[in-house]
Length: 65
Image 1 (cartoon, one colour):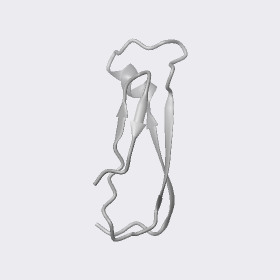
Image 2 (image 1 turned 60 degrees about the vertical axis):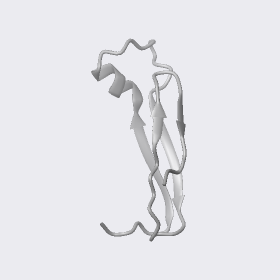
Image 3 (image 1 turned 120 degrees about the vertical axis):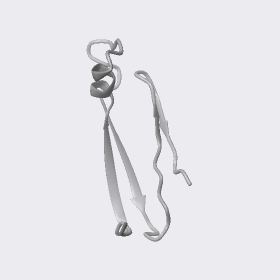
Image 4 (image 1 turned 180 degrees about the vertical axis):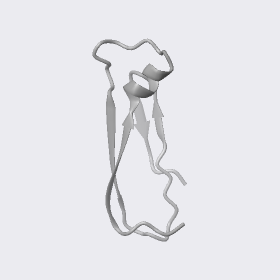
């Protein structure tokens, strides 16, 4: 419920583990394993939504509303 301080942050998404736990066929080694997503907070009072759209072979992200 509190605002995040101004600064740089990183989210890490374990894509290969996520799909592996769901028995999705992956290459060996998987094309995407872990995705680091780095972003900055410049206005702590704003709402930040950082969606990750992902498949076993691609991903995209954007600053949501």
